[in-house]
Figure 1: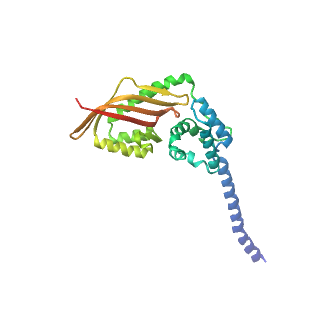
Figure 2: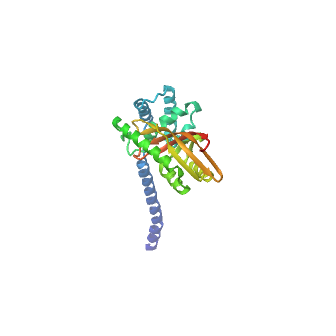
Figure 3: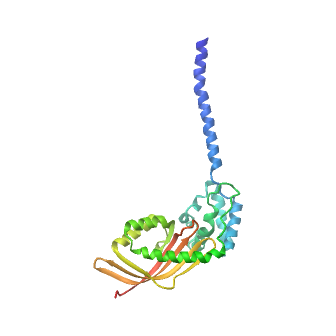
Length: 263
């Protein structure tokens, strides 16, 4: 009789252990789900997008806002995957709309869909207007520093791009590319022109929005030397900067060179 009881207990113990493990796994899954960052509801997203666009004086027609909200509504249950990266998001829209969509994404949408600890978390407020002029001064200074670094070697260039470029950048005629693409392109440029010098010309200007986005434009005089070759000229440049994190992050790098005879 005792042997029968012993066998019953030994048989039941693995079953109880298995059931307990199942309860623990389910509880862990529920806890993980509860701790996942919550995306705004479609109504919250649509309202925040409209408010942000109005507050930043971004002119967007109602059809485009409705289209963005409709796509968000369709993808929200799966984490709104196409909204997580700028490149994937822009691919959802016709070429003619992408400039305006880019502006909305960088100034509004990226903040709206950022992870929130609770449904009542607040969307970051725009910077006070009185700080805009200060940002413009910082943006212009960054442009001067950026050009001063134009002659740096490959290892320093890689570190600079890694630290100061956004995940995706509007880069010359290449459209939106990632940092690795920029590093490869600049690496080839440095290989072709090992000796490079740049002098920023007077007249650099910057425009910053209350959200912390700046556009810097100016001209630079350059001289490039590679082996027996050399080229000189003046190039225009346009730099897009984001001060969301406090430090400037490059979101755009474009320009056009005009070669001249080296004196």
